[in-house]
Image (cartoon, rainbow, N blue to C red; front, side, top):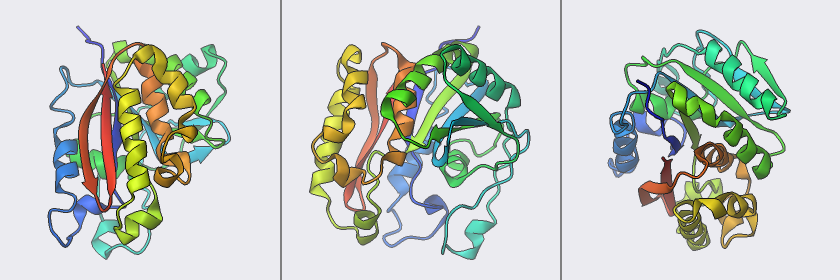
Length: 265
């Protein structure tokens, strides 16, 4: 019997960070260890995964119906071996169609993409979380206007998938200021946003959507997200959670910024 799957917002790190040498060597270890335990910590192994990636934007929400995606190495200037990584998880065209039908029922326009490969917002964290690549994955884009209300509504429309053995994952970062990230300098204003985000996500679920819709007015919002692409996958996960409580399942200060992950349900 299928149990109701939770929804997740996971950090995907920086480029192919989990597959490189770092100084100090433990730089990404806590995040890697968290991701490695994600699937095993579920009450029931998912039948399929719908993954909303921060690294795909389209005019309309677009779903990958590619049955055998290759890897899309959409990062630059990393060591040669990071362009030889493999993660051969099958696609899930049937899930893409089911998701599109649910979105259509809610009046949300969608499109399909039959050729897109797994971008690094997908394969980098999932290669850690699912090293055997043995659960089919359908990718979902953001809508290019990055409207938070639209993505919350999309998540709400997708909620029935949870009872069908589908794990809905938003892959992004709770803080994504690349300039601060590269320098490794403390970003105290971004920490204010992380504190706000944790309070909202773990607070009253009936107030959560309204707060997330107005995220840009939160303390430190633009210090954490000069552009909100890496935050929007959270909106889909939160929308699909409905009235389920949210909990913080990972948090640390990494390269000068707070990073958090959340689970709903």
